[in-house]
Image (cartoon, rainbow, N blue to C red; front, side, top):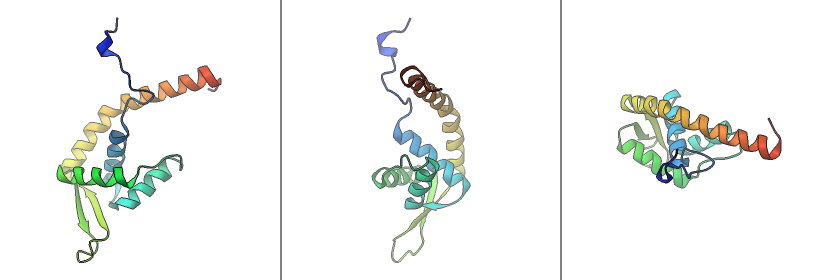
Length: 125
């Protein structure tokens, strides 16, 4: 029996947008270095152009990840400070491995919720 306080009221996704974007940033930076707008474009592309994180979400997350030493940033032209590139650190790789493992079941649960809704209401498999 589920007690009221145990109910998950977050729907339909059981992972926050911020958590998903952090996971994606670390994933992409585990592959190569990127700058902020490149990350937005890459995520948009990988989401089949159905969704993209805003600059107002990406840049604070990049600063947070850098502040936690999960990523390292550098200016392409230090005098102009126009384009800041990022790469993942060793600590970032460990953090990425941990959250990747933690979020997998949550993402699968979210997928089940969406698939069942489509099947029940829209008769789609």
